[in-house]
Length: 340
Ligand SMILES: Cc1cc2nc3c(=O)[nH]c(=O)nc-3n(C[C@H](O)[C@H](O)[C@H](O)COP(=O)(O)OP(=O)(O)OC[C@H]3O[C@@H](n4cnc5c(N)ncnc54)[C@H](O)[C@@H]3O)c2cc1C
Image 1 (tube, rainbow, N blue to C red):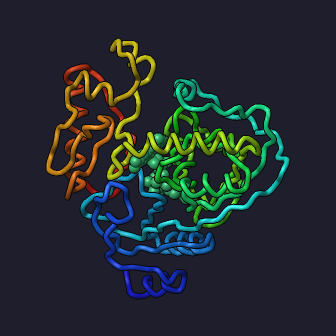
Image 2: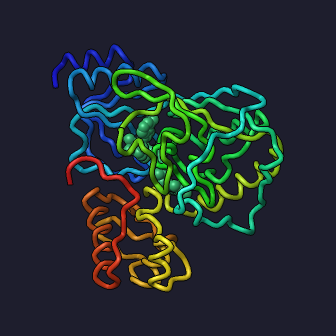
C-alpha cells in the first residue's frame, strides 16, 4: 500500500496511524500492528474508509470494544477501523410494538440469576432509541438511566460497543442483545440500508453479519421507560459481579455446552468453566503468560506479557483434552484475526 492510501485516510480522519500496535485496542492486550489504523468518531468516516477499502480491495477490519478478539502477533495487513462514534437519541416516546423476534431453541437456555433484583418490563411503555455503533454499552446504560430509560442492565460491566454486541448477539445473564434490536443501518461497502430484526437471524453467538460482513452504522433499540431506580440498582449489582471476571481477556473463551452435550456428560451446568475446572482439571494451567483464570475457568487471561500464540496454544490444549477425554468438540467464542 502506498503513501497515497495514507493520504486518503488522513483526509477522512485526523487520527490515522501507521504500523500501530493493536494490543492497545483489544481487552486481551495482545496483537501485532495494523498496516493502518483509523479512529472513526463519526458515521461518515466509517463509510468513507470502507468505500476506499472496497475500491482498492484493501483488507479491512472493524474493531469496537475489541473485547472478543484474539489478534495474531503478526497483526493485520490492511486498514483497521476503530469505531468511536458515540451518540444516542431517543426517537419516540411511544414506540411501536416489537417486531417478530427469532426464538431459536438455543436462545432459551439461560436462567436469570435469582438473587439480583428482577425487572418487570411487561407493563412499561416502550421507547425507540437510536444509537451509533461505536457507543460503549457501559456509558450508554448509565446515560439512558439519566433520561429515564432502561432495559440493557444485564449487559452492565461488559466492555463492548453496540456494533460488536449486535454482531455477536451478545448475551448478558438471560438476555440477548438481539431481543432489543428493532432495526439497524448497515453499510455493505457501496450503499447504506436499514434492516429489521428478523434479517439478523439472531442465534447463540450469531447474527447474519458473520456471513455478510456488513458493517453496523447505527442501531435502533426498543427499550423501556419506567422503573429506573430498580434498573440502576440491578445494573450496579451486575457490574460488580462482572468486575470480578478477568478484564485482560476476551470473556468466555468457548461457547457454553448445548443442552444435549450437558445431558450426555451428566453435568450440573452448561458452563465450559465448570467443565474446565471440575472435569478437565485445567484451572490455573499456564502457557507463557496465558493463564486459565483462577477466578473464572471459562476465561483465558493475559497474566503479563502473553502473546497471541500463547493464548492460542492454551485454547488448543483445552480443546485437545476435551476431545481426547470426553469426545467433546469445544467451539471458541473468541474470534481469531490474522495469521496464526
Ligand atoms: C471482561 C469481559 C466480559 C465479557 N462478558 C461477556 C458477556 O457477559 N456476554 C457476552 O456475550 N460476551 C461477553 N464478553 C465478550 C464481548 O464483550 C462480546 O463478544 C461483545 O459482543 C464484543 O463487542 P465489541 O464491541 O468488543 O466487539 P469487537 O471485539 O471489537 O469485535 C467483535 C466482532 O464484531 C465485529 N464488529 C464490531 N463492531 C462492528 C460494527 N460496527 N459492525 C459490524 N461488525 C462489527 C468485529 O469486526 C468482530 O468481528 C466479555 C468480554 C470481556 C473482556
